[in-house]
Amino acid sequence: MLISFGMICSCQKQDSSAEQQLAQRKAELDAREQALNEREQALNERDKVLVEKETATTNARTISPGVQSRIPDPAQVKAERDRRIQQLPPDARALIADPSQVNSAKDEEKDRLRQERLAQSQRELEEIQRQRQPKLEQIQKWRMSHAAASPAEEANSPVPSPAVETTSPTSP
Image (cartoon, rainbow, N blue to C red):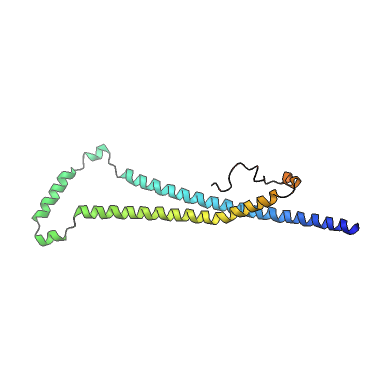
């Protein structure tokens, strides 16, 4: 009878140490998840700043009415430029770039850079989600194994069981 009592006591000690280890691991996983959330928020804020900068640049290109009256008419400027180009010798005219080709090349470069930034942001977001997935799976496994424990332990647990949980752990 003494041996049985000793075995029961040792099992209870092992259970409490296992619970402490699980609680410690859960705390570590929670800290990692929090760090990932902060990194994801930082990336989202960075993307938002980039969009705001592009919007500000676009808005800065608009001209106020007071300044617009001092700017010459684009049609007149183009006509004057064309007239001066026609006065140049043919070999000098060949050296002057066609403005429509120059502008289209600039627009294509801007579009390409914008697409690269968007793709980079998407890759970073996917990387964060890939890093986060195994940790979320570990948390779910821990919760499932904890839910299989006795109802008395679950009632004393600070972590709700998955059946009681109202939000999905995979939602950002």
